[in-house]
Length: 266
Length: 127
Image 1 (spheres, rainbow over the protein chains, first blue to last red):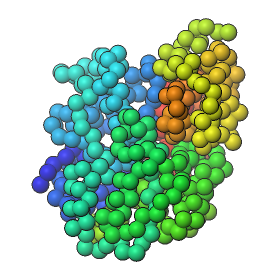
Image 2 (image 1 turned 90 degrees about the horizontal axis):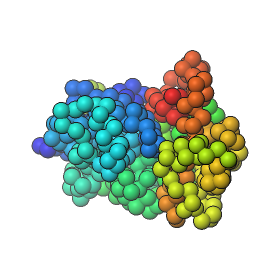
Image 3 (image 1 turned 30 degrees about the vertical axis):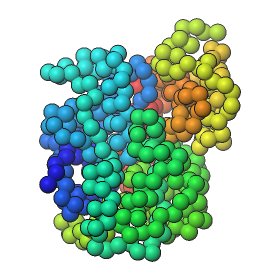
Image 4 (image 1 turned 180 degrees about the vertical axis):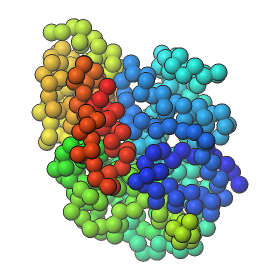
């Protein structure tokens, strides 16, 4: 059984427990051990692009350094955590001035220089497990289900740092849908923003964005939408008029692997 | 023209605004275009001219969703979102200029709102 360091992040411990519990149950079914470090901090929620603001990058670097000390790659699930941690690592490994400032703050025994490898859970499925091997382990395929993969913005952009997939024509979530037996729907809004945190200040703008996304998924014949992001799920469900169900991708994964019920009863 | 403010914004964004070739693709792809007084391409032009004060007073600073669409799709790699962020920081880093005050947050919540939204807004709007 291969072991990875697992970073759930704050939202998966509270409002997005489903994203977390199905991720853990499915990993176990796939022979992957996700080990949560004894201590971790919030990723920060948003990556600050400012070249002179090292303080907002510290919490992400602490997590990266814990993974480095444990000597294993870091697995993330939440799109926002993944984006912040991945962008921070990209920056810290290339920007010497930022690296020096951050390490001066942290005072680690050995400076952190971007050594940790980060996989989003979807990347783990693709690059470690393999979608072909995943398909072999599916016991309840989602045969005939037309599923729209919603990438949103955080998984793919900025692509030079995220390096997950083609930012304009991604395939990783569609390949995931095929592996669990479903039929992917290809749609224009799959990598456009849901409205994000503007929902706190302006519901009208959030609704405009979320309706644009959900209307497009419906128009293209989707029966459901999947996401990796708690805030996307919230916006698409609460700020759109659509009745199309939105699920975390890990829920469909757990269902396909036949471990969903056991995870629900835990 | 306020040179020291322009220098600060240039250093903070890390962007060379002079690379912009005026194609407008950043604004064309911006999900907040309709809600903005100044659009992403205008942030780039106005910072280039040093005309930054109007941007600092505009609600447009709090309309950017940090979706990085303009960063990804700019053919010249200008990265307009970084310019918006730098101007926003110039505004909110001033004493008393926080856009989001902790006391306001309880009125913005509902039972399902993910922590992620609150943390993100707080990090971007409050220093």
